Amino acid sequence: EAEALAPANPVLRARLLVTQAEIALAEGRYEEAARLNRKALETAEGASTSAPFRAAIANRLGRALERQGRHEEAERAYRKALALAAGDAGKEWVVLNNLGLLYYNTGDLARAEEYLKQAVDLARRRVNAMGRDTAGSYTGLAKVYLDRGRPRQAEALLHEALGLVSQNGILDTLSGHLVLLNLCIALNDLERPAEAETYCRKAASVARNLGPWFQVEPRLHLARALSLQGRSLTARRALDQGLAAARRAGDPVMLAVAHQSAGLFHLRQRRLEQARREFLAALEALPPDPDPAHRAASLAALGQTELLDGKAARALELFEQADALRARTRPESADRMSSLQLRAVAHHRLGQADKARPLYRQALALARRLGDAASARLLEDNLRRLDASQPPDLGALAEAGR
Image (cartoon, rainbow, N blue to C red; front, side, top):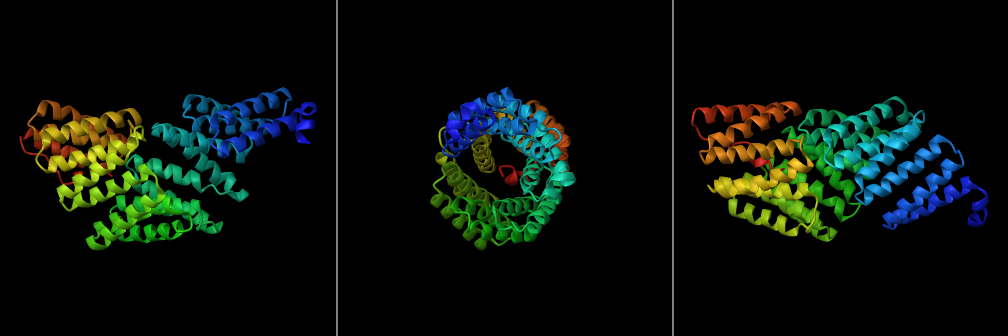
């Protein structure tokens, strides 16, 4: 009936196209979803429909394009949606959030922070009062802070988000799970593992209702919290549970993450052969064209194992591969700063001061831009050691491949 009426009613036709596009998106037919949303937007524009209605369609078009990896086109669609959504707080918040997450997923952390911060500010001023679940903006911005080496800011934001999901009665949903999980990560980064353990266990409890894929990371970060407390046997059990959940989930990337976490556990214990096996398993598990962040992390961690085993030349090869990936995908991140630092340390160990010094300085400048005082102090110390012809301090490197 709707299809019969649609030719004479452009608004109804636009709504019908949007519905068809949503079905295509849910079924993974992203190209078809984008085509239908484009037609819906053209129809809505021709009928002079309201700006918020057209904003919603442009936002849906952005989502469909993003799913195809057509990021520049998705950005244009989101920006069009943002201009049309002006004055409608709910729709403006949705688009700001999507635009911020697009930048996060493409490695532009500075712009991700800019737009997610706007989304959070708008949620605080107006959208939270509408009863919407806005926790995704808080969690997204917290992840940016974590990636930029600012866990204290992430913690404060996540506690605010925790209050929201608790108030709205959605702590036991995916939104609540993500808040709890990222609180666990932030507290581990702040070296408060006993508090981290509490939130890891809460995230693991919520994940039991969400499926095996969501059960992996809480167990892995719980293992890190337990390891930081010196509870190695309990940490090993948590890692085994994380690996088992990753196998049940059937996701090769998540399996690689689990192997990498197991490798870091062994690396902290200086069990180098076990660490090496886990990092190689992580690299083997990754599909041919994975998220570069996971491959870079495994390469960097494997390089640390080789460095601690006295194989500085081999370590340098691995660090350079990891840094090339991070320079392309996460140029202004704590991970990039870490891989620059690792390259500098390898050259330092090889007695190549002329190559180590500029890398230390580049890493130090990035650490200062990120506000990472602890890493800046370590880098300054290693520069002094280099100038004094002393070996580098390797004390903080076991966390660099996190």
